[in-house]
Image (tube, rainbow, N blue to C red):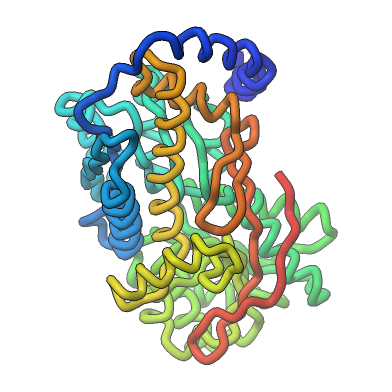
Length: 387
């Protein structure tokens, strides 16, 4: 049975599951001494800026929940392990979390690490939530894995709406050699070819590369109406910098812009257009406003997607714990947390309003199109793209 079928089956059986929960409710909940939530982050990876803000978001959420009395009076703790951006190290880190804490829920990051760790979590029924990876290689393959970030097929097609709107026909592209980058590449190429566009050049590189001159020289020769950048922070910064220094003047379109990208690209980021999950600190909903204000007060920066997603991730797991606890018994297990979200897949989102998990585990969020103006991301419009 595929993961998709099992999820749909779980949703179809929701009434029966709720009835079972009401039966279990007669049994008092077996509360653990602490709710310990694991996290695998690339804290010492070369491109560790993302991990730094992920950790900030995690700890802010933990501190807030505990300041409000925890969950049913029980403290929440985050057990964070460093995967260094290396799959083997990530697997070892996961096994440490299992041996030390018998971890039941874990936040994943980095596609390569997630692909290595997810089968182990699936086998041991550990609830997984990924707010950083966009690879479609993780979608629908693991029934215990949920995503609170838009995945590659959504992000790439959202970025392509910019090229279509501008009437472009020829695409040159630079992509990371990671699974994330290649997922974006495949999704973009399929969408662009279906539209009738042509691809004049494709180059790839390591995400930690410090020299991409060969690739840029080839793309300059290839030409194209626009340059698509299928990379993540800090990669797009170097691509933007070297593309402009090589005399490439066409529109650059990507899927991410962070402070780290701006630091590398400098003035060469001007005019860059990108599609991303739209976290709006000025949203009418009081939760994103409060989170953004508290984050600025604590760290001096506006929260970006990674901080928001991992902050939100802790709250999603906390919500699953509350729902599972209502069923009584030994509820703090990965299986019970999964069942809680399968039965009721709508959860509050720090982006404002609610997020709904789809049968394949992905959470649908609105994707915004932004343009870099004077070093700042300026919202242009929403890209309405469905799964």
